[in-house]
Length: 68
Image (cartoon, rainbow, N blue to C red; front, side):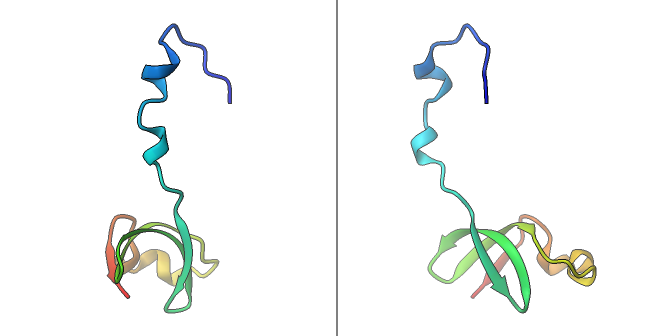
């Protein structure tokens, strides 16, 4: 990725070390990317499932919190 800007690198990349890559998990047979909130809770980032039904289920909408 190329970024053309007059902003200094220190400002542009401030806090980039704190970004955590999402985990891929299978929950109830549905592949998804999640962000771990705590040991037993995750937040849905996106679904990676090929089935159509999980996309219509409000329990798996992006931003929903799932208890493990």
